[in-house]
Length: 443
Image 1 (tube, helix red, strand yellow):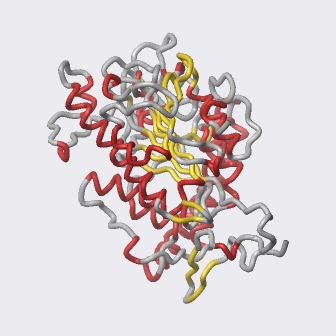
Image 2 (cartoon, one colour):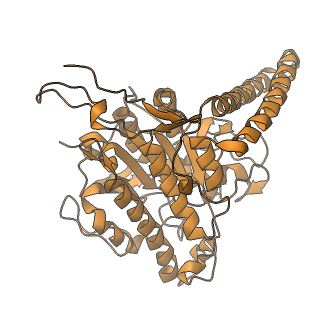
Image 3 (cartoon, rainbow, N blue to C red):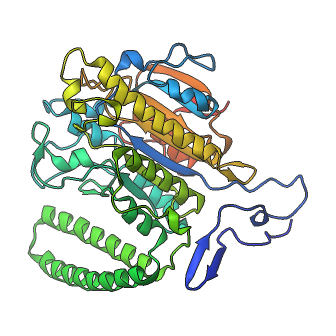
C-alpha cells in the first residue's frame, strides 16, 4: 500500500495565509480495494441546556428502535437515524447531599465533572476536572486548539449566586482543574478569530497587543514565583494552579501569533454582536461545524445558556423569564415552547453535519455529540432521568435510531467513560461512574 498523495495536514498557502482542508480522498493511502480505509478523526461536543425540561412532554414512548418521540423531542424525527435518546441517567453529585439549596449551581458544575461542588461564595472554589478537558489533554495536541468552550451569556467570576454558591459554578461547565474553569467565549467574532486567526491589518494589531500582554504575563509569573517561598501549602497549591493557567494562556497567545490565519471565506467571519438571540445560537453551532470541518479542534463544549438563566424567549412569544417560569404553577406550556426550541436548533445542527461530506460519509458519521444537563425537570429541581440526546455515529461505533432505557439512577458519568474510551483513552472510571455504558455501542 502506497502513501497518500498528499498529507492530511496539507494547507493551501498564499499571501501569508493557509487554508485548512477537509478530508479528501487523495489524503487516504493508495492501495488495493481490500485495504482498510483510514477513518477521519473523532470529534466530540457536549451541549448544555439549563433548567431541565418538562418531563411529561419529553419522555419518549417505548424503547429500542421502535420508540416514539414525544412533543418536545419530535423535531429530532427528521434526523432519527442519527440520534440516540437515553433515559434514566442521573447526576447524584448535583443533589444536595447535605449541602442544602443550590440545585442550579450544582447542576451546571456537575454536568461534565461528576463531582460535588464545594459550597462557597468566595474564591475558594473547588470542583474537579471535566471530561472534555480529560479528553482534550489526550487528543488536543493534534489540532490547532486543544478544545473550544462556547456560550451565549456572560460568565460571572465573582459574587454569590443560587443559595450561597459562587457564581462561577453557574457559568462554566468545562474545568481544567478543580479550581480553574476553562472560561466561555460568547462572542462569535472572537471565537472565529481564536479558531482561524485574524488576517490583515487587524491581525497585525492583535499581534502587537498580544506581545504586550505576553510581557505582562511574564512579569506576573516571575513575581508569583518569588512569593512561593512565603506561602503555606494550600496557597502554594493555588499559586501553582494559577501559574499553570498563566502558562496555558501564554501558549495560546504564542500559538495565535505564530500560526498563519486559516483562510476561510471572508463572509464566514461573524459580526462581533449577533443581531438577535436565535442568530447567536446558530452562529455558534455553525462555528463548531466549521472548526470540525477544517480540523482546527476536535473537542467542544457549548452552553446554550448559564445555569439558572432567566432569559426571556420573546422570539417564542414567551413573556416571562425561563427560571421564573419553572417556579410558577401552570406554566408547563410556556416552558415546553423553550424546550422544543432548543431541540429544533439541535436538530438543525445535526442535519447540517449530516449534509457535510467527509471521506466516504458525512461529518456526522465521525462525531459524537452529547446534549444534556445536570437537571431533570426544573419545576421539581430533581437530578434523575435527565433528558439526554446523543447524536452522531463515532466512526460507526454508535448506531443511532434508538431509545435506550437504562436502569434507574445510572450515573451520567458512565456515558462519559464510554465517550473517553471511544476517543482512545484507557479510562475505566470518571466522577461518580460505575463503569462504561456498553448499551450505547453497536452490538
